[in-house]
Image (cartoon, rainbow, N blue to C red; front, top):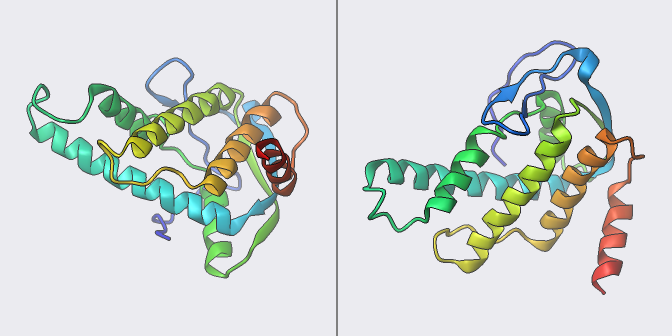
Length: 193
């Protein structure tokens, strides 16, 4: 698991979120933030999700660099995939550093669960999580097809985690109560069977 460089922030995590309609990011004020509680965060599943995400982003970086050097008309990479790469690597690059550090430390120690992990997100993060989920699903389609990406499609448990994680952010921003990971996993598996 690759650990990003440490950044030092104030008491609250720095939160950057993609704007719903544009290409930039915004830094919200403290009064704009909503508390998001991730209950029974599965650390090792998060670590697997992080590794898969890192693989995908590395491949996107290589494709993007290759695309810049190649003639756009002659390149074998579809324009839609290149737009997707650009959006995923620029619009959704912000992270909550304090939570990531806690998750990286827990993963390194072999911890299975963090009982409660709290994020502070602006309301604009709700629509952004919907868009991010859509883009990651689209990236998975490219992975499944095996035509333009070498990265394997998202493993089922990681995909379910991603649905829970982004869904919890969106739903709690809208005022819903938190749903613990095991409850989501149980419901999702019951719905598949």
